[in-house]
Length: 365
Image 1 (cartoon, rainbow, N blue to C red):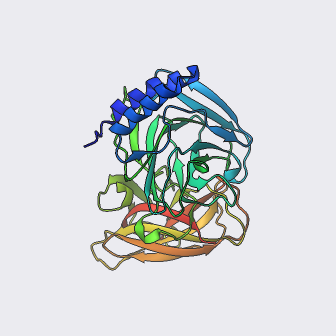
Image 2 (cartoon, rainbow, N blue to C red; image 1 turned 90 degrees about the vertical axis):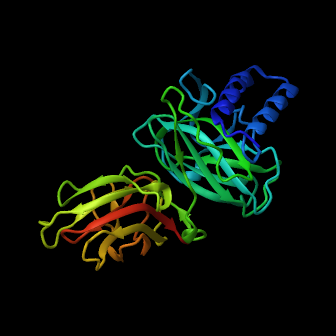
């Protein structure tokens, strides 16, 4: 039975990460990978001892070394000064073993943001036209070093000759650091790493929940709960909720004195770019907590991040007393640069008590 002590794996990988810059022998490197593989769930399919990935696009990329960097005491620092399509700038992590169609594949990595905004998109793919891939997931980064995991089921096979995991981050100006990366097949999770001197915590970054599988391309990071709220009209509480995906929710307590025609509003970040005419799906996990049990309404629309102006009239969905996934269809009225729009959640009724779990914004073109 394999050990789940990821701290031991990361410390072992840390020594190898530093050693890679001194060009270790092929046999020594192979021995390191065998030892790492033996301690991980599933089968190791990349080389976690290397961070000299192929970097492309208009970004600076510098290796940084510091004792406080968890996992390997080294990372790649990327500084992006322009915005455009997210896939225009990125870093490619090569796969060393075959990934068969239908395999479960999981990537775990340490990362942090140095700028006020920071997000990366992960994709498992073939690095050859037409660049077939799967598991595309947006990950919001924190200011502290955090362990993230993304799991997907392979829709296409990936050979060692062309198989990669790509970090894409060309959607906005930002400065980020990515440390040790571990990719395995045959496991839904790698492990929960133990914090090293308080520098690392684990964020379980999941792919789409079963009801949304195949529904489109994710444009936001559902695990990012850094929402903003209108100053009046209600109060909020952050909660742990094991009965809903990602395990977190925000409880909205709308004031009894909410004026007629007004609403309490929460703003959810959207990292991806949107084109005019894009067919979007807003999927909202929520439940009504009102004692009357007659349901509660939540509306949604796109708004301009800078001005707060709505781009279209909101549409509403009614939630009952049990967790449900409400869906709102929307067509974008114009092109929207990455990072310049938000999803406004609108609570129009006084006295409502509503829990809102993860929110998903998907392009369905």
